Image 1 (cartoon, rainbow, N blue to C red):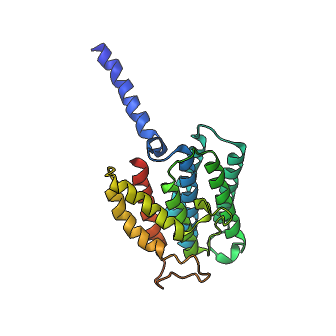
Image 2: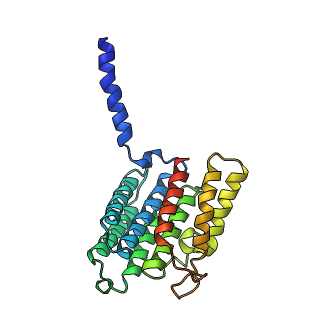
Image 3: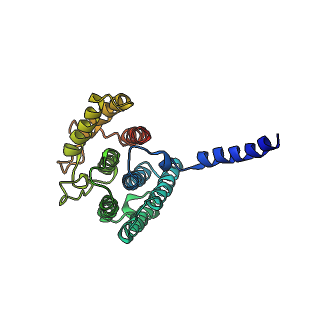
Length: 246
């Protein structure tokens, strides 16, 4: 009896510790380096949503959570670098600036979107430098596409790394959508568990992303329909959460 009474508190503590772990611990389909990329893009998307939807409290809370998750992802890297830590600090600084400007567009410097995109690309690049060759970047590509979509919806064209056309950092929906589509289709053909459900959500999201019209300087969709940033934001996160939990 005494052994059981001692064992029970230990068991309760163990369950509590597991419950308190960051979702990053349970992410199986992506590397720690890609988790940094995913969280960096998510934080940037959340800032854009906050600014674009009138500084609602729920969106500010989502942004703060994303910044905490990004910090946890950086700290969880098995091997970091000074360049990555500096890039992380720079992105957080630019995101904080974006909040500090307040909701009025006239208070946001016209060059700020460019500075924000440069900071995001800097952190994504440094995280990729630490990645192993051949790592899947499906979740990172999706969240980066979400950033591009929300940017065109709320701020204007997102400045991708055009000198890096061989990586997702220098690509828009014209290359990234077929890339994601091909990877999911290949996994579905192999009957990988859970991919069929991902494909259902992806087909919906793909239609919106293909309408992004990045090749045009006019901030309108290819179809002429209104952008749907909140829908793309939610569906992207749901899809990448499912993917990372596989």
